[in-house]
Image (tube, rainbow, N blue to C red):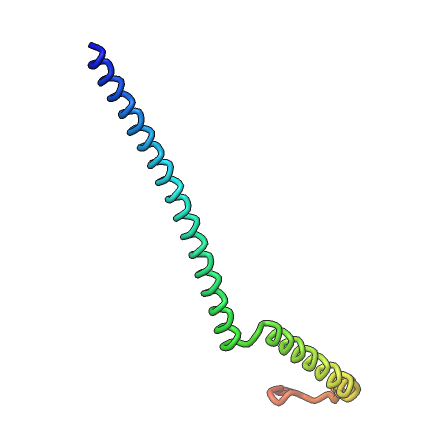
Length: 118
C-alpha cells in the first residue's frame, strides 16, 4: 500500500512539475510576444521616420523649401504695393485735373434726335 501511495505521490509531483513547466512556458511565450511586439513597433517607427525624411527631401527638391516660397511671395507683394503707391502718387494730379475738367466743362448741345416743331 505504501508503494502505491508513493507512486501516487510521485505522479502528483510529476503533474505539479509539468504544470509549473507549462506555466513557465506560457510566461516565456507572453514575454516573447510582448518583446516581439515592441521590436516590431520600434522597427515600424524607424521605417516611418526614414520614409518621412525621404518624403521631405523629395518635397524640398521638387517644390523648394516653404521658407523660400513664402519669402518670394512676401517680396513680390511688397514690390507690387510699392509700384502701385508710386503710380498713384505720380498720376493722381493729372487724373484729378482730367476728372474735374470733364465734370466742370459743360457745353450744352441739342441732341441729334431732337426735332424742333414750330
